Image (cartoon, rainbow, N blue to C red; front, side, top):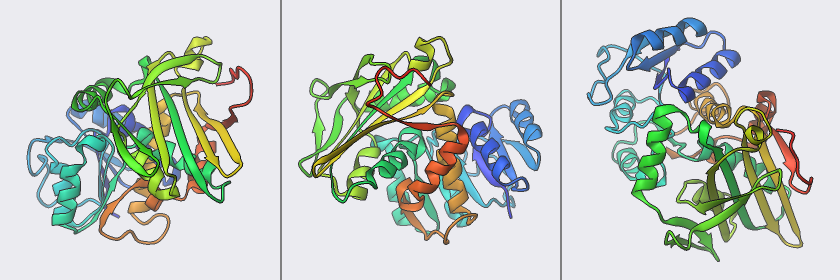
Length: 332
C-alpha cells in the first residue's frame, strides 16, 4: 500500500492520528508532512515505517515529487488553498479534512461535485466527528428522537496549538451567529440569541453559545430529530479545576417519547486524543482497512463509521460515558 500522506503530520492532531494508526496497523506506511523537516523527521522516526517530507500548501503540487504516490491525503491542518484536496482528486485517492468548519466547506463541496474522482470525508465536526458518533450511540436507545442537545467545554489550555488557535479565530471571525434545528427548520440565530450555558460534570455552569457546526445537520439528518443544538464553551475544564491536566467533556442530552437520557463523554487527556481518534477512524475506513469500499463523493463521519465501533475505540483510548445524574462527578 502507498503511504498515507498526513498534512500537518507533526502537529498535535496529525501526530496523534499517526500514533493511533501505527498502534492499530504496525506496517501501514505513513508520510509525515510539515513545514519543519526536523520536527517531521522526529515524528517519523518515532513511528517507524514512516517518512518525513516538507510541503508548501500554497503550491499546486504541494512541493512534492510528481511521481509520488499516496493511498490518501489527510489535512490535519487547514488546507487553505485546497491544494491537498486537488492533489488527492488528481490521483483518485481519498481526502479527509478537519478544519474547514461549517462556514468554510462550500469550496470543498463544489470541488467534490466538479471532480467526483474519490471519496471526500468532511470531518470538520467537534473532535473530528467523535461528538456526533457518541451522541448517535446514546440515541440508539430511542425508537424516536425528538431533541438532541450537545454541550462541549474546551479548556483554554487545550485548543490544539498555534494551528488550532488560528482555526478557532478564523471560524469565529467568519460568523458569530448560531445554527440550530428548531421544529424541523435549520435556523440561524443572531449572536445575542445564540448565548447559552453549558453545565459541567462538577456542577459548574460555563457561559457559551450555540455555534454553526457540522454536528447540527449531521445529527439532525442521522436521527430525524426536529430539534438539535450544539453549545460550545471555552473555559477551565473539570480536570484542571480539580488539580489535574486539561480534560474534555461533552454533555449529550437526548429526548424522545416519554424518555430522556443525559450523559457526559469524557477523556482526561483533553480534546487531542478524541480528535486524533476521529481522524484515524476516517483513515481506516477510507483506505479499506475496515468495511466496504467507499464510493467517490462527499461523506461525513456518521455516514461511514459505526457509532458502536467508535465507542469501542473510545473505551480503548481511556474515554468513558458518565451518567449526568451523578452529582458533582469529579472523576475525569
